[in-house]
Length: 167
Image 1 (cartoon, rainbow, N blue to C red):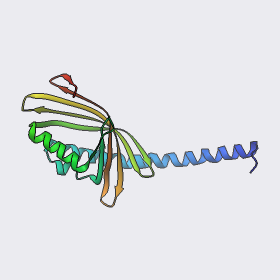
Image 2 (image 1 turned 90 degrees about the vertical axis):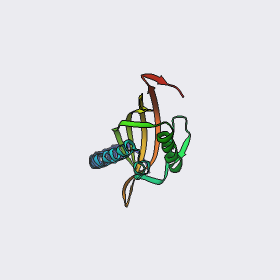
Image 3 (image 1 turned 135 degrees about the vertical axis):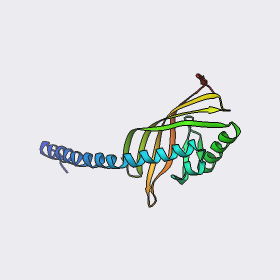
Image 4 (image 1 turned 90 degrees about the horizontal axis):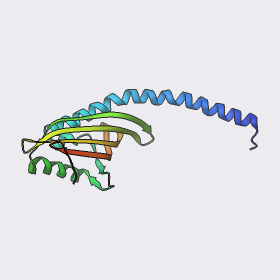
């Protein structure tokens, strides 16, 4: 194929038309999906406050993976065991747990959701703990609804009685 100014102009116009027609479709998908995903986060967080690990992970896929900021991975079973240990061994009681959606990107495999998560609670009944995290989550549409397949924690900061916790 020979390229000339007419072909380039037609190609550019065609790409522009495609972008203009595709962007509203993504915006419409985001507008429909965001409330559903936010409801899912609310259900997950409410279950964590109740110390209901199985309920908190009910919307996870069986092959769910958590990736921490250092790149270490945790399977669904390891994730459940970790939180069960935290709640029982350290007597952690969560008083609030909120995820705020910052961005949703639709892609071929599902949707990527950027969130900010703030968790507050106590350890042993009186020591205050606050955890602030940002993460990128991959949600998949399944016959059972939207399910969380992967969480990649990008940043995490923990304060213990107002002091930044390193460890």
